Length: 260
Image 1 (tube, rainbow, N blue to C red):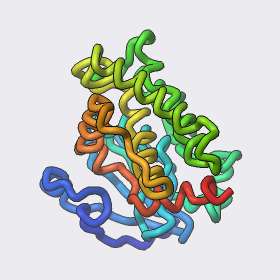
Image 2 (cartoon, rainbow, N blue to C red):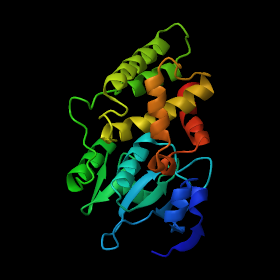
Image 3 (cartoon, rainbow, N blue to C red):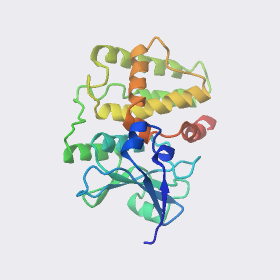
Image 4 (cartoon, rainbow, N blue to C red):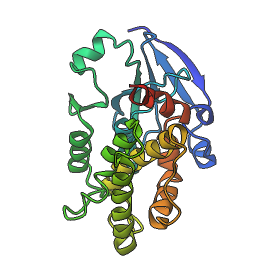
């Protein structure tokens, strides 16, 4: 497969973080088609080939990671475990045949693990945890459901056209419950350490903040201080900054849900 190669400054693509600039001199772009880009990310071990990961491409800026929170969850897991990976940015509006052979349903993320392509962020992250248990990101089962209903209630409120249908209150109830959980158990879901639950919930809260701020002029109430601090802590992690979507992609990605 022939490929054109170009060099992209990492600050322009993956992060504005100075620490990342120091650790990553350049990111090479290789493409055999217009439908995806392959972006190598720093390797932790030269003897171990990087994982191939198919993720959503930006729909607003060329050669950028798109707005899929489930893709970010997988990338965050790889980052926190210091595993190298090659991102294949897939245009989900024009899915190529090679991608549909890998993912017949046309969904991302998909990762190649032990010579097999695996879909679904739940399965992918569990597989990575089992294969690479150090550093551990395991969340105790009794804590794994903390905040798990926030995403669905956020979507309900975002799609709502009726201010009196109870969807806003449903979201507030879930956020309040999570706030009380963090008050007693925080600052993260598993106490002082980042775990898989945080890497799943963080991208969803990021989407919630941007989408509701844009479409509803709504933000998490200041009274929910533990949730607001949790979001601030997660969003400022180097791995999160490196793998987050552009706000304009998040806004564009949720527009069909809002318009209907």
